[in-house]
Image (cartoon, rainbow, N blue to C red):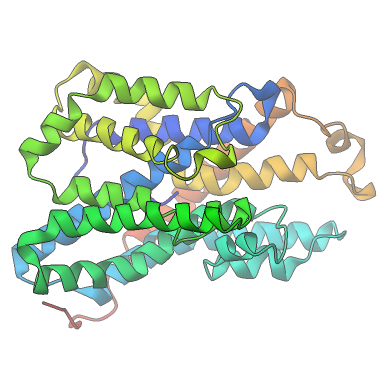
Length: 357
């Protein structure tokens, strides 16, 4: 997932790390240990919504406007270099091990951030890049949210909190309505219009008065319990939960984030900020990109040219999970030091840019 942070907030990298570990274990399917590990995706969504909105609001308060070209440049600078490296690896894999994989459907939907709609409408089952549906939802949010936020700040500034809350409720209501129309789970789960409530809950956290956020953060033990129960549940993605029960996971994530950002000296924050978690959290975007490619390469390794070694891993086991993690981390570190960090130093290509008040 994307990494948005200007001034470091202790504990958030640790949350990223726990989230990406949960997703990783869920994708391995190892003995159903974390059937609900997909809640990590929603933690990422809430984090992204909170951080991106905090940055936009701070810029608007500071300058009375939001520099949209610079904003989009920063997002592209952060997201595309690592994505392009991963897609190059996927394209190479498809060329070296040709089979039923179609390189254009593996690469192009991910490149253009439309994989969520490819999955939602069952156009193609991407074996190596299907996980980029979450990145597509985030990117679509980045495209439209600054414009919506500017509109609210211009025409309804005193009702900003209410406006964001209503948008989140509208997404939940819309999802419930579409479910009543018996749409597929893929359409409900992967659609931007039906799965952006977590991003909006994060945005709501960013625009709430700080005292409200602090009060919400006091509920963090309950929130942790909810996330643990869902993570360990085998039926976390049960279709019946997607209407009104499903929003509990991003809501719980928002409560934990509220605690982290308003109580930086708390024991919870210190435990999340230990070096291993903070380190993994900083490179979690690259790890998310690579882990699924590596995992699927091993599980999908039935091609004759792959040899007997990869062919052994037709089912998840401890050896496969360990090897996948090690290879994924190695590729993640290459991505971080060779591509992502250098890209962060790139400057905005135009000195003057259009900004919107």
